[in-house]
Figure 1 (spheres, rainbow over the protein chains, first blue to last red):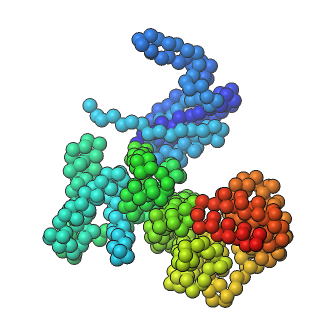
Figure 2: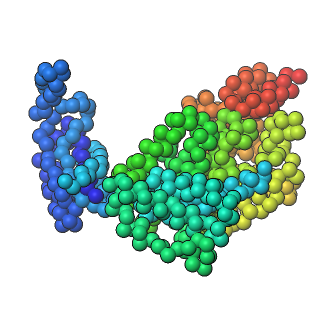
Figure 3: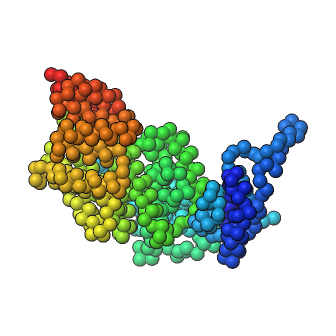
Length: 113
Length: 411
């Protein structure tokens, strides 16, 4: 089963990223070596975000992330593991778990065409 | 009526076993329950006409399995289950018991599934009552004081999470076992107290105490290495043993120390004591074992005619060190009052409230304070404390009892 491990970071975490990189590199490597890595990306910090809505056919563009909360989505891993217990075990090893929080969500499986 | 209740409780044993077996194979509690529900309906229709099959559980299982296969053929998301279900006991013949399969008891995995940390703690007890014992949502809703539709919705949501999030139907690994068992036991305790909160003995009849005891027995059997499971069973049995003594003939409330031990159920007390003794052999005390030991000391009054207050104080100290709670702290003060006198306990009781302002709304704190003030001759303060204790009490019988006590003081 595939799960997205969504990484939430505080402003401080975003600022500390250069220092956190070795921990994330080690985590990615551990996932890959265990054969669980299915993808993932780190995102640039929330000040680079732009939110778009289409209302009555009209495009509304706004500076900033959605939603506007203290912790922001900073990136995600896509992992392939047998079940939620395994996903939670890997999520707990993610560097963000200790600093802020990670959210684990199963990927919606699409029926083969 | 009692016989019907017994038959109902016996049927609950089969229900959980069969749901567990089916869930283990299809990974979807809701689908397993639906299929089994269909099988029970078929049994209601056919058994009165054709006679009860010689292996009723196997009969139900064969019918439920057929329903799951039918559904899997229609439903693409369940399609992958077909080979799994087809491979299961195809030759099972419920009419000839020697050919009927032995159904393994996988209810422990079902209990752990219901109390998985990824499931909202508030729905864990209802989920257990429904999937392990087959209670309907309406009955559970009544005990938990929520609207039936709301309870039904929350149960459906929890089962959808189990299926969609991929919560596995497995026993937790050894290192996680103590924490996970604690969640299971906590949910059973919540099921037991569900009928009580705020409605006292009247609520108990609408509550699910017997069903919770059934779950506690099951858990003690399935988790022989976990002393807290036996501790919880002992605690619930001690509470059950006093059922007939908590109310006088006229329905009025009788506090524990004034209960007539002859009205306690000796068989339940003996079973509770045996469970507690067995639990204590592991040498790993826990919250439920200590609470059961406190009740065991009270039950001993039936034999000795007195209460061992110093031993009780020791148990409360141990309990508070392990699992601090407002109820435990107030209980300890009641014991202290017997040992050191009401004045000394009163001082400590006030200090408790200074340290923990939330006690200002805690009914037992006010009831004990009123009693201690009365016993130390502070009539005016006692009257005020009784008023507050009465306001905070939800059980009408307890309110009447406190009014009587408050009146005795002014008389």
